[in-house]
Length: 486
Image 1 (tube, rainbow, N blue to C red):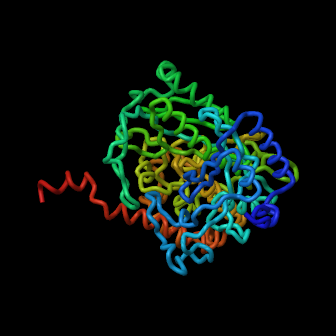
Image 2 (image 1 turned 90 degrees about the vertical axis):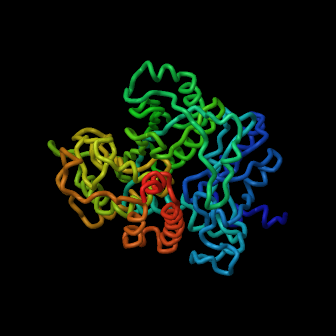
Image 3 (image 1 turned 30 degrees about the horizontal axis):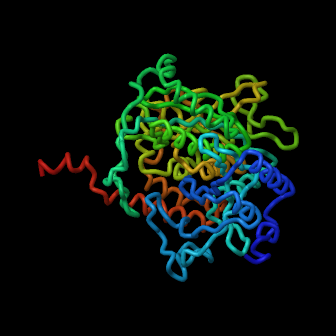
């Protein structure tokens, strides 16, 4: 390795003084804690962690040089199928440097280094993605969120986010790896066999959660052990369903926390014979699909005051809060492509299920797409978007909310009146499927201006390929419905 390559981070000015100080602390922590393996990870376009595990001896070089990974990882759908052909001079994404499955460089963010309490002598660190030239890769969604948040700061605000993640945890009935689960890119194998852990229908039932106490304790220890701001673990309405809530924090910190939370929960559960999934509506979850309720507010940078807190009695939000809310509603169709990025998530949009089905808002109403909570003197005044699915890429989901909300602020939009009966309101429905949401995103000048045409078209290409595979698949429903009668 040349000196120039070894100095990649310094040569391109990728770290602050705080980053360098944190890197020094990491070296000491590795020595003190006996860390032998470090998982060097980035979050892909789907919100999935990918990366390499390096040895203790090799990690010091990764801190200063980064580590390479194939750029083709950014050209694949969730099944691992390449949507754009990397083995051409121009894969068709509008960015040089993506051909030939050539390398991109994963550069660690030292502030995210953490020891994993459930994995022996192992730590992990999140990375941002750069080209070998030192230029940021535009498809790094973690970097994209930071760029959007700089625009938020230019408006004089800081975005604060509080995540609530619902999930299902099942017993894993697979005693070994069934050959039927082997898949190929574009054709995943069969899903693992799972069984329920609760009967459902008893929201917040204390005794049922107590019967899961060994699991609850393990999840708690894992999340607290990696420094996440876990607020609660709750029994949800659906069978085998729980909810995790995290304290509100600055938007980029919350996005990192969601990524790490989902990974930690899956890994901890697997070690205890369970299978956790953040899929929105697994088979059998007819009464209670899983959602991601995203609480969001703004803080004024000059005064550090909560910007959504109303000054007048009888108001639930400030003027800027109402305009932000109006932007969320006005851009809901396009933003849904990021808040609900899977085919499965749209099967959650059904009335009377604590999930929204149309573009409305309500005052402390959990059936509406946007729930507004606030009053004069309440610094926690906020809006909650209840349309998201828990498997969404957190950087794209949160960034989409900032873009939509500030469109409302910039255009001085006023929201419609709040509703008391969200499932009976005369209002446009949310997109009925992923394809409709992607079409809305394609037409959105707001998102094209904020994210750039290159990023929007890349995302559309990936997700339309996924939706097309879904439409072309002959399902068990079709087989049952037509085979014997037609």
